[in-house]
Image (cartoon, rainbow, N blue to C red):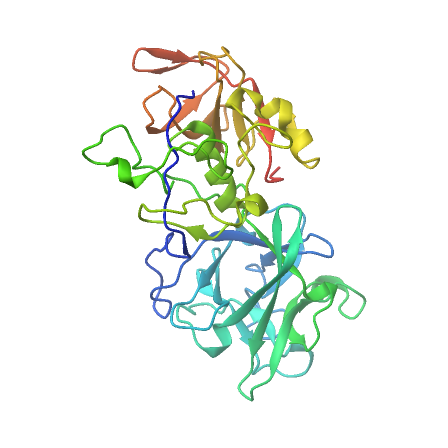
Length: 378
């Protein structure tokens, strides 16, 4: 539901939000759940928790690019380390509950294998990687990762998926290359099991209450790009797309310049015109494929998709409505998060089902008209 609200201008601070308590050794790091994939074949990187050796490329928790569908073995956090050079990161394996090490003490062909050592909860030199973005592929940033050994050597992380490592050794990640080619190019993109959810929307306090939100905290700036009107449904959804596609410009306080400079790379333009998604929520399904040929629209919900209501449909007003799908339940119902469902500029989490209406106060809503798939989550 859409009521015109001013855009909150906010100071952009790279990596300033999304901080959370981290295991020892990563104090002050920013973190985000993600999947890692090879750009050459788009295989997901798995932590081989079922392997049993204690060392070598068959060791328990060695990393390997081999999955076609992400699951619990493919979840990671990339933690950007404070007090370190730009691009210094640590990799945390969700299934191993451990940091990933480049095993430079292993010898021969095993040397440099990436391994989430059981119990490795601190970050040292071999758990420190250097991430450099080199471009994009679709909506996803493409980057290289390097690790340094104890002798000062610096090696790109590679996944050799050719004949050098046949069988189950194919795709094992190793820091062993001095030149970055296709096999050393990676993409980071959250997926359906690791969505960033919750009300971390930077403009959530730009509300109707002038005592809490003085007019100096925002400016009325429609149709100038970015996230448009604060606390609107489409602005919030554009933010969730942004951070779940890899955008990292976060803000915690009000002030001028609130739109991330890279929103066009990681999100969508919610305004009207060509190629905007808007001007209103009701227009998203119509404009999606024109905006980006990789987007698609159907009636099948998936985590990370945009639930969209047409004008005057499903209990919504003439502007329509959009919400972010957090979860699809076994019974087919969906859990969405959104702003301004009831017209009061408020955040809410709601469940929708094809079998029964969703009642919020004295308002009744129904199943979405469409689902717009933007982040390529299946």
